[in-house]
Length: 248
Image (cartoon, rainbow, N blue to C red; front, side, top):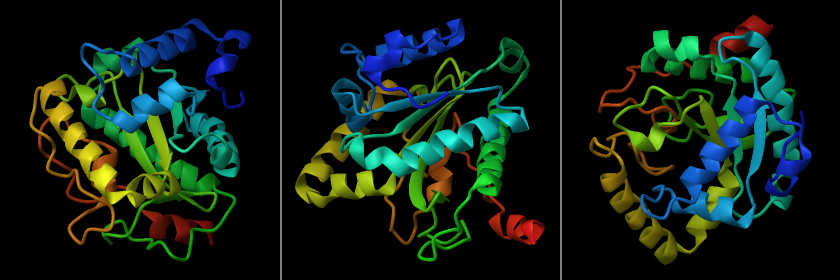
């Protein structure tokens, strides 16, 4: 399946779970009573800048094979989609995975998907980006593009900003974020509003891992998947160096 934009939804022969996922996402992005904290995301949804993709069960390796061409297509064309664009990916998340799983289980699946994506990447890792996630300038890259990854799951109960009825990724190009930050005064104002919204949206305090790219004390990988509490993994699961050795 190719990437889908808003005005193509009615033309696509979507499965029931796919229709439910889109409907839930649209409802969340357009909620005026309890607005979603990320203002650029709600604006992107309103303006039709987002692109959507559907993949399989996050437990299956074949799912990464479905995701890789979607992210490649997005990487090649996102500059034409609008200044606030992101790729929204919905996973076919079985009820059994939700009922018997845990946030930690979804976290493991998330990182496995990223590792698999790296193996399927047709282009080399950008020379300007460190391969070690413990470097403050590291971020996930695919097809030569740098991305911020956001993961939401059905098992986040208190951090509502990371809850979604299906496992979901929001993949935002670094170029989009750089463009947003060009107007420093505007960006600072929007970030303050986002933090204010987060305080009312989530039932737990803002996670201490949230930071700004480029700061010496910032590690992007910690922000990709936030726990329901203030804990975090002691080490990034993205083992790029090991994967490089396995390719040789």
